[in-house]
Length: 109
Length: 119
Figure 1 (spheres, rainbow over the protein chains, first blue to last red):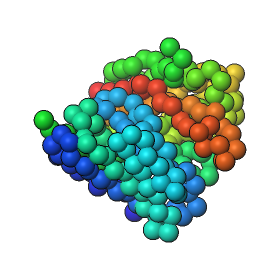
Figure 2 (cartoon, rainbow over the protein chains, first blue to last red):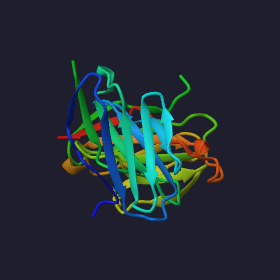
Figure 3 (cartoon, helix red, strand yellow):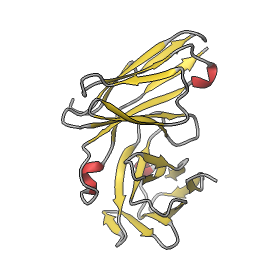
Figure 4 (tube, one colour):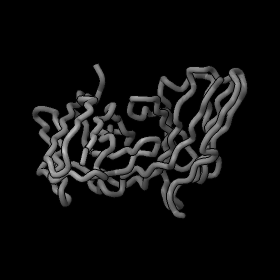
């Protein structure tokens, strides 16, 4: 079983739609959680950190459920520029990042 | 540009040749990480340094792989006797390690990567 699991997608949605991605992780001792965005053939870039209380950054909302070991990302009012792969990431005790395989999002006009 | 810099961006080599990649981290960052990413997968951890000390190596890092960070600044990753299975994107990241309570200070910033193709 992978340490971080995501639905690979692709999620194909129209502009303006709301889309949600989910992720589960296996190490209950994990402390820090992130969503990174990766465009085709580019490096991953931090989208947002994820806190237990939930956090929002504009159209993006991230949630963490420690009891279920579950992380989510909600994107409202999707834009064409949101098309990318979204990587669910867990930081382990030695600060290295454990990545999911990514969820592809395609936003169509 | 004050971000993480990697060189070269692309490398094509023949099987059996040695290759070396360089990473220049963000200047004040004390931690430097190497990851490898293959098509359709997320990046996988290879190794990391705190200053010049190599603190952890993944089991993915076979004896053909060696990494150094001699002065605690730039790092090199060498692959000896390359195999076709080594073809991947090699990503470097850096961070400023702080107490866990300061999550923002542990954010890893990635370079653009070196894409290796072994023929």
